[in-house]
Length: 430
Ligand SMILES: *Cc1c(COP(=O)(O)O)cnc(C)c1O
Image 1 (spheres, rainbow, N blue to C red):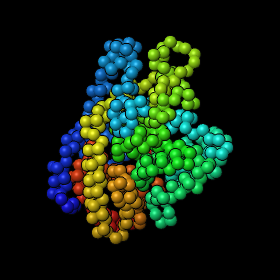
Image 2 (cartoon, rainbow, N blue to C red):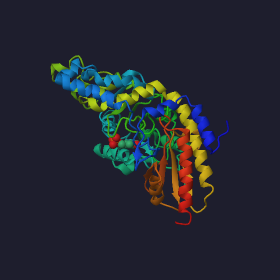
Image 3 (spheres, rainbow, N blue to C red):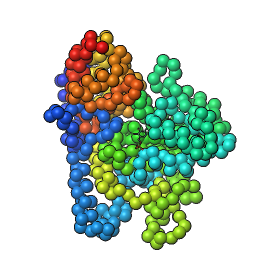
Image 4 (cartoon, rainbow, N blue to C red):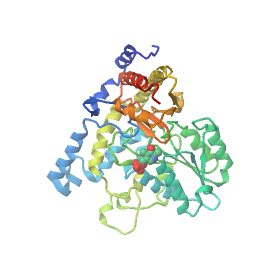
């Protein structure tokens, strides 16, 4: 069917959507007595209605068993993290031995850098995208300094060309080749948080390996958004958070991927803790650290059960829905948002709102980033007041992320209606 910015079209798309029923499995925020349009799953996903029940099981087992819950609970806590592994592995395209949920994102990246950024005088450079998420940038800066290098020399940032917003893959490949002999690592966000650009992780990994470097990715904006095939792509390592598209709740435990080509080698240097120790011998309280094989060998501490229980309630939904089906819907939903958005804004000429995210589905996930021209943060504030929850990133970008699990095509249509009223009100004001 041809897409049009009409209620009838949106409703038809919802009728034809096999995943439409998942919307009801989440709580949709009601602010000032009105259910808002929530397009911020890229920042904090919504709460699965089942989360309470999953949590209640663990609270009850704690009440019933105390410490014995580690072994006698319905989901024994000593191995609770293993329950999250199958779904996590599916989401990132990994063998189960290659993933584990632990700690949080920035912490995990530092731990992975201990193993996979081991610079030498000759090979010490890291290639990344310009305008990384600040935490990732601080990671790179402090890691290179920790090893005695200067950030200005060691961190090579690839930027969009003059007048462009997204980075051309050929420019990344050129940078990799230019620095080849000195390159230790290619480290990118799978999807850039600011522009929503999806990078070709397979191509970047191959290019890194081709010059003798490793490739790692921050998947904060990619996991649960686009299907990934980390194992097949030969990615060396990756990490993600679970509170964005994975709806794990604010600040919850993150996940890591270590390719088996490294994970099975227990001699790889790393920082150790008892949860990464040979699990048959973990409680023998021996002195010498003997890491488990696979990603689990990077664990340090026993795990936060309550957070993991909440995360499991969402991962179970992902397993049911399937990331491929979600992506299929997501491509349509984001295309519909692009159409509705452009249809609305072309009627107004004093405020320009420009989508800076790539327009082809292969180069983006669900997020559209909109650059504000001729207006500023006041526009974002007005949008929030009109009941549309998005987010603003300095200096001038509003990010909209229609999430296939819980956003409908009608949500997108209603967004267009609210945007129209808003722009009519603002007309002439700025
Ligand atoms: C959300 C996000 C983070 C947040 O890191 P935490 O350690 O979870 O606070 C880091 N990097 C990127 C790219 C992000 O999108």
